[in-house]
Structures are given as C-alpha cells and as structure tokens.
Length: 464
Ligand SMILES: Cc1ncc(COP(=O)(O)O)c(C=O)c1O
Image: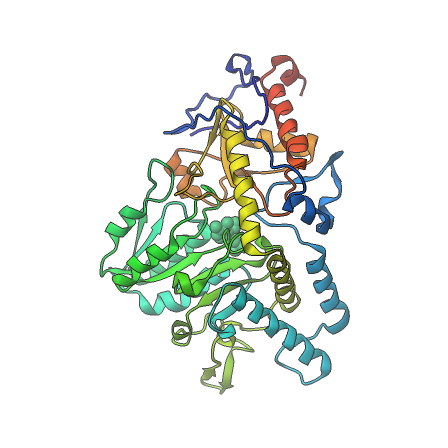
C-alpha cells in the first residue's frame, strides 16, 4: 500500500526526501514511474477557460481566504448562469407535474421536459428521443440495465467482460446480477502504459460473452478507450455493449450511432447540469423488449387489480414523478456546451491535459497514473497522482484550507483498480472548459509548490 502526494510546476527542487519528517511508511510508487524533465507552460492569452469562467458564479468567491480554484470536475462540475436561470425559471414560472395535467403549467412543463429529452438525444446523436430514459444519475441507469436487461437475458455460465478500471457504479450492479443469475464476471487488466488491455479483452470474448461493460474515459487513468473497435469485436460474438460515458459526454463529441453501442449512460451533474438527473441511452429495439425497472405511476398503460400493462419506452422506465426541473436544467447545460462546441471544448481540454500531465510528472517524487499523452493514446484533462511519502489527504486538506484549491483525494470509487495498482488512495485533479489556465499557475501550482516545501521542511512541518 502506498501513501504520498505531490505535484509541481515551475521550479520545484524542494522534494528532498532527507527532509521528510513525518512517520509515513516509505512506499514504492508502483511498477512504473514517468520521468519528464521539462515543465510545460500554460497556453497564453484568452483561453476558453478564461472566457467561460465569467459564466460560473460559484467560481468568483474566496474559500478559506483565497480565490477558489476548483479542480474536482470529475466528481461534479459547477453550473453556468444559463443552467441556474433555467432551474429558477422552471420553479418560478411553470413548476408543475408532467404528462398528468391539461392545464397550462403542466402542458408547459411536459413540453420542456420532453424538449430536454430531445436535446439529450441530439447531443449524443441517438436516432430518436424515445431512446433516452431519464434516471437519477448514471449509477441508476446502469442498475436499470442490470435489473431489466440483465435479469432476463443472462443465465448461469454467461460471461460479462469488464475492465479493472471501471467505476464501482459499473461493477457492483453486475456483481448483484451475476449472483442472481449465475453469470460470471471477467476482468481485463492494464498494459504497461496503464490503459486497459483491450487486446487481451478481444481474446477473452467468445460466444459465452453476453455483455461488455467499458468506460469511455477512465475517471482515474484519464485514458480514452476505442469504444467503436471494442463494440465491433463484442458484436462479432453476439454480445451487447454498455458504455459508461460519465467522463466523456461532457468533454468530447459522443455519437452513439457511429460508436454503435447498445447502452450508454451519463450524469447531468458532471456536464454542467443539475444533480438528481442522468440518462440511459438504449437502442430502441432493446428498450422495447425490456421489462420495467420500477413499478408505479407514469410507467403503465393500464392497471387492473391483478395485473398491469406497461407504457412504451421511455415512460416504461420512468416510474413516478421525475426530476422535471433538473431534466430541463440538463437541457440548458446541453445548450450551453453545444453553444461552445464540443470539439472546441475537447481541443482546449487536450491542451489542459498535456499541461497538467507534463507539469505533474516533471516533479521528482510524483507518480502520475495512466498513459502518457501521445498521438495514439489520448488522455482526458484529469490526472491522478501520488507524491512519495506524503499522504494524499494531507495535501488535499492543506490545499483547501490554505489555498482554496479543491482537489480530490481518496479511492475515486475505483477500489479494484487501486488494489490492482497497489494503492490505498491518491489525488486527482480534473478540469473542465471553465478552468482558466492563466489562473492555474498562480493559484494552484504555486500554492502547491509552497505546500510541498512546507511538507519537506522539518521546522515548518513541526509547527503545523
Ligand atoms: C466513470 C464514472 N462512472 C460512473 C460514475 C457515477 O456517477 P453518478 O454518481 O453520477 O451516478 C462516475 C462518478 O464519479 C464516474 O466518474
């Protein structure tokens, strides 16, 4: 198990292990370490982050006496004014239940709710809005498929192929279904570059494989998987594919028809939208054959005392009153992201990814996880890392309390991956187009340099 932390920027010659005063066990940083010698400069002039930052009111505040620097977008993103306004407008002027009333407010709420569904469908290029089911979040969307499709399509000995880098949300529902049906979970490990070994995955696929569950972008390794290729292999053996797109849909163009995936899930709160809503994309012919997930109002055609008949998708899977205002807010978030342009966002975040990665891995003692950005291996703008001999939680706490910098420390809901890498926990920074690179070196990286200096200085450390 390991502990440590760190990162850097410009000139960080302070990582001198001789000065470490804490009683942490010295733990190796894993089977591979990067050695970049040069730091990478921040892109200059008015970046996309600099421009869009103005549109996120929450970012314009001080936290613990410093200007807030929010680097925890992989966990949840902040919301632009357009989304806040859409929520307020719904609750202030047409709050009402959907699909249930003929009065003006209900009709308006229903129209806006269904318009939001169409916006999601268009955003990921689904062939029709009925292929989009609103759920509470991505986790619920995966559980929906596991319960509804999984319970009736899997039997003893069938195989579900996943990677060790999946989020808990994409593992636990399948464990539950496997226990109920006798299906078997098979996990593929990582290559030396720390990306899921998809060649091995290809070799694992057989006519026993009924489902492949993969992330599009890993929330921990930052790698981007070739979903279209994997889907082709899976379909060749008759398996379906479920893609966890939580970390890709907000950051790049995602086209479900060209990827040809069977199911895809994402969460609104990671894409500048409100919490409490997410979505499942499912191919029409699959959704139409699936049983309901939950029973109740909205999902029925007819109810008798001894049985019921069910509505067509997507209503069949949306029992009870949905998160109406939140779905409308998600629609506004999609308008916001589309207004900037997903390709533009992706290009900017590619710069961010290179910048973050290059600066972090140039520091002696810092171990960045996941692949090196290159022409062939793409990396998202997030980095998980550790610094030798410093506990991640200490770094995260001090950055927050003394610099107003929000980063994540912990297992990132990927404990199997952590065990695979021999880790207990680590830090991560994740950015969005609202991250202002010009602001980053000043407040985050310099602050971090300073804190590392403190950590490695006996006198200062003893005072804290
Ligand atoms: C890759 C990935 N999958 C699934 C989830 C679960 O998302 P939610 O908690 O919104 O359901 C997350 C959230 O961190 C994630 O990063």
